[in-house]
Length: 481
Image 1 (cartoon, helix red, strand yellow):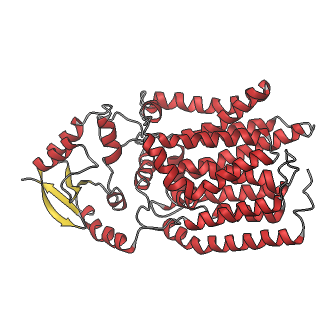
Image 2 (tube, rainbow, N blue to C red):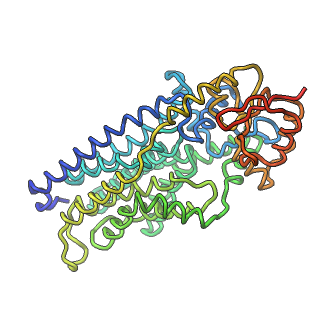
Image 3 (cartoon, rainbow, N blue to C red):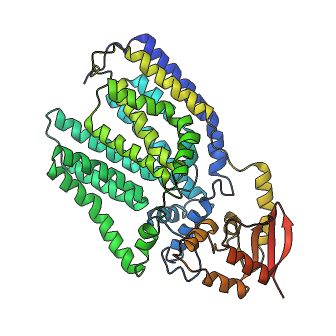
């Protein structure tokens, strides 16, 4: 498919080149924050410490998925592949945080490179540079791409799968003989992404729905064998190795409660600010431009994922896929500059595409880019870390403090409280630990009512421990007697 000569005029190419240079310059300027986050000695997100701890548990041959009546009381909600990768990478890299953050950054930058590679093969090259640079400016991607989380790496593998399948389907539409081994490669990558996080199944669901619609049963079968069989084998093994706890942690106990207020909050407070322009651009592209059916199927599943913001424990990572596939969709619709599907209304493709790009640029720059912990917070953590260097075990609310001093994590306060409130776990084992003075110190907030731990746990703490240190809005309690 040839690019229209209209887009290849010097004036529009000059605009895209200038746009790409400005966007790339802003990304490089903001990359200082990314580097600070990568090398920060403390967690930059509340979920980081526990993900580092899971890698340590695998290293020590401890099971992530064990009977919760036995300490530690940690909730491993995802498959084990990401902690395994952290563990192996940690052999070559120093520091507890850097291996996981580097994996996340690899996924973030990998998506930008994959987007650019596809664009250079199929779109106007200057428009590709502009889209790729714009993608890098996304605050949500930058944030999740610089913390110990599996999301960006999982999405990267899913995006590579999508591009491989796009090439396969494009060759079929062009009447070329397609290589079916591509389906096996795509299925294998999908299996890996599912073993990183359950959301990787979206790629399988999207292509499965596409094949059913097109009645391509052979393609569906070949893809499904390599996408699902490895996951099934790993699941069966882990169910056996953990005596049945694996699926409880990763499926049965995953929070599926619905909170409509959460959906409204995330859509109104975060999504519309950063992605409203993209949502409008996607709708405009569907209406006015010609795009492949497969790209529409995949984008539709990214939109469906946004509805997951209604679920308990959802977060901005639900934006990530829509941002990536939405920007790709704009490139397919406008950078190829194929004829519009409709003759009316008459449009100027260069003007609309440029307006969308500028809207995205302004939206991304109106949203705060990620940053690391403040100097004051880092100084505070450095000062109180001496508490955790003392003898014995410690029950902490800030989980990175015991972790950086080589101590174990015993409780994820918020997740633990959630499991207790749901009636899934029993509070008695932790109460017994408190009564037996298992912990040298216990950290609480210096406020009238604790909100991260169950009331019965807080009451038992006060019966068996007394305040010893008060500073920085926290209390560290020591055992009575």
